[in-house]
Amino acid sequence: MVSESEDYSNVVRAFVCQSTIIPPDSKGFRAALALQSNSLADVFLGATVEATLGNVNIKPEVFEQSKTKLPDVHFYYKSSGVSATCENGRVSVVTMRCNPTKLGQGGISVPSSCPAGTCDGCIFYFLWESAEACPMCTEQDYHEIEGACKKGHQETLYVWNEPKLCIKGVSLPEKKIIICETLDFWLKVGAGVGAFTGVLLIALTCYFWKKNQKLEYKYSKLVMTANSKECELPAADSCAIMEGEDNEEEIVYSNKQSLLGKLKSLATKEKEDRFESVQLKSSRSQNI
Image (cartoon, rainbow, N blue to C red; front, top):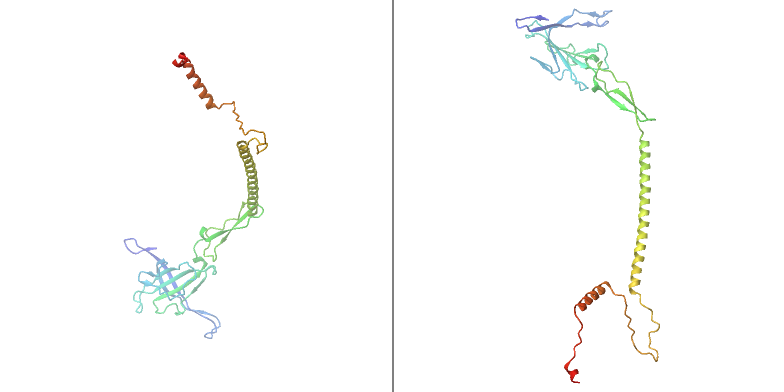
């Protein structure tokens, strides 16, 4: 870093160079030739996921859109010198894109519409695809898979999300084994409880039905006994009056008194005791 002013603003010195290689047999050469490298930028402006930084704007049609949801990271560089064609100096944009299939340094490509990397000679575009451009792995980049419960044990495995778009960072946890209970066990328990409950309900139903039948029989017998006592009369030997028999009705009085009759007799007896019995003689009897 080099301080360029008194306000201690920092400038990062970096270089972007372009080298042209002529393949063999194209111009009659037996070996490939490399021309002198050309400096495109020497000052690092910044890095962002936005397509604009300062007065530099990346055209969306320069490169194809990424197939992943991860955003591209753009590194902006600028040359300190100016030229007649580039009044503001030349600018280089290096786009870093995550590509897990390209390990190590990966590969650099230029826009298909501009094989030289620039269409106007002032802004150069480079696409750098590499696994190193992917973010660090976190707990959000893997998920767990629970196995079936076998013999009272269940395994839990951890696998990366597909496609894997991260590197390094956290590693996968070890598989976990826990004690479990199979579904068959609970089905058997439920079936046993259900069968026991059903038998118990049937037994209770039969018990109360039988008890109800006995009570109904006793009640019917009690009613019939009460009715027979109320309606029972002495049987008559004959309904006709034989010759020589008087048509007289025999009245039978019961010597038993009811409770109400006993109370009345007691009250009458008390009244008779209060008064003396006096025999009255009439004047008619004296004259006779």
